[in-house]
Image (tube, rainbow, N blue to C red; front, side):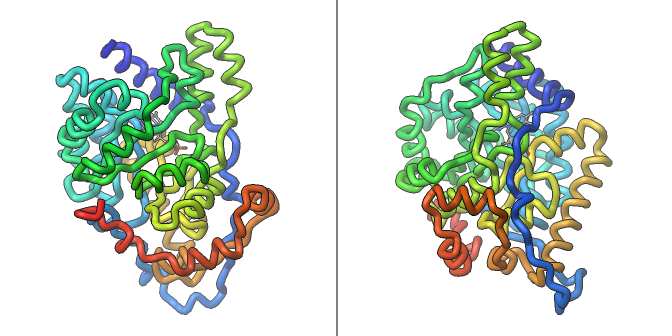
Length: 380
Ligand SMILES: Cc1cc2nc3c(=O)[nH]c(=O)nc-3n(C[C@H](O)[C@H](O)[C@H](O)COP(=O)(O)O)c2cc1C
């Protein structure tokens, strides 16, 4: 079983690297930041840093959890973590399921903390696994293994539904999440994996005390599509064809950010799913997120070379800086208060979902600064 979990994770990396696993749209192309021809500031004076989980990041960015559990993925983790540390951005590890079962694999995750001691490191467990065992014990072990600053619990019902060996029993997840929020010493981050968080889910999470949400919406890596490719390799025809039908399923990232913030005003929101440039990050912050996350582009860059990853992160940083400059925002917090213009598909969605966008942007203007919402010690 451990070998299978470990091999499956390797297959995921191979498919994600080689195949066209992205689908749909984030709808960020319908978010317009308004150009300001009189920035009244110097590009080099722009402050792109934010404080997240008690540590200062050079820009509002996180490499979201992808891998671990196999010597090859251990080496990928090492390079990702080195880059995270160098550029001072947060980093998550992939599901720790394999190492929770087989301690000899723990090093493939621990390399992340070894390399990235100066930035937030996030542990990771899947929601379906959580309800199969003692959630507190499992969570504490995962956090301890990498001395994590937070624990991400990933929700992936879409992927599980189209995976031959899928774990489709989601009963009891909310109860387990509440236990973790009440009992863990580090914050719990609930994350999707590419299909997005809806207003209804954000309300449920708010009601049990979850304060950190990674929306991971549609428009980037689509896990149903990843499983479709795997089903093709395995000649599982039904899952391949049904997977194709659902291959752009999910809530576009731009909409998921707004739905989540609308339902859970004090949340710390990570925008991910199809975030590909610094401009995407700036748009998602103007829409109401606090930081952004990327998975696939980081993986594809590191698989080319360490230098390629370094260049990619530098480019992202420059693009964020340029977006702040051209919207006359001196820092990330003031970007969150510039009101973007929204295209027709976004407006139509928000109207049909009962979200008054005038009121929404008024609410964003009065949002408390990230640092005061992000009271991770004591406040969880
Ligand atoms: C190869 C690969 C493996 C992943 N494994 C995990 C995982 O173990 N746990 C998790 O929470 N998310 C996992 N994800 C999901 C990402 O963290 C992210 O939510 C999703 O890919 C959307 O972001 P993207 O469009 O930037 O790739 C994985 C993504 C990729 C590409």
